[in-house]
Length: 250
Image (cartoon, rainbow, N blue to C red; front, side, top):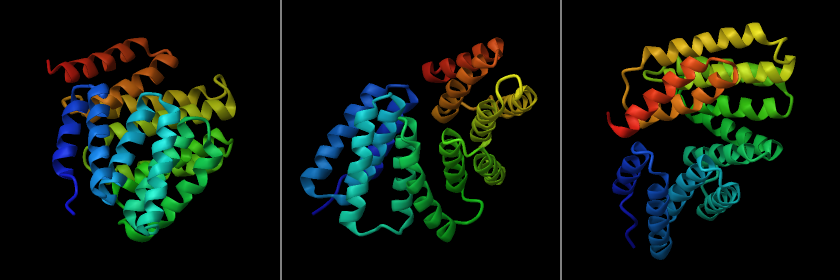
C-alpha cells in the first residue's frame, strides 16, 4: 500500500512555517497524520509524529508534545529500527520535548541513546551532532551538571563551525552557555562570561543578517528574548525587527 507524499507534505509545511503560520502548520500535519494512519504508512506516522512534537513544543502545548513523542517512540519499536539514525533523531526530538517541559531527568537517557547511534554512524562534522550536543547540555544544566554541560556546548560549537550557514545555531549555543554560567555562579558572578558569550552571539547573528529564511527569523526571535533579559534592549529590538521583516516578506 502506498504511503503519503512525504516531499509534498514537507514542502507545504515549510511554507506555513516560513509565514509563521503555526496554526496552519498544525492543521496540515494532523491531516496527513490521519492519512498515514489510514494507509498504514509507518514511516509517515513516524515523520509526522516528530514534526508534531516539535511544533507543539514551540507552541507550549506540553501534554500534546509529550503525547506525540511517546507515539513516535512506540512507532520505532513497532518498526524494529531502534538502532538506526532515524530512530536516533526521534530519541533526540523526544528528549528535547521532555526537557522543555520540566522532565530533564527523563530526557537524559534518550539523549544518550541518540548520542550512541549518532557518534557511531555520522561524520564528525555532521550538523546533527551539534544539535544533539547543544540540547543534551541544556538538560545537564537543568540538572546542575554544569561541567558536563559546558563540555558539550563546546563540542556543539566545534561541530557547527565546520558547517556553512550555522551561525544562528552557534549564537543560540553561546547564549545557552551564558544562561548555564548564570545558573552556576549567579548573575553577578557570571557577568564576564555572560558578556563574552553575548558579544560572540551578536557577531554571529550580524554576520548573516542578509538571510531571509524562516530558520534565521526563528533564531532571531529566540535570541532576542535572551538579549532582553541581559539588558541588551536595543539589540533585542533589532532582532525582532529582522524577524518581522522575514515573516512579512518585506
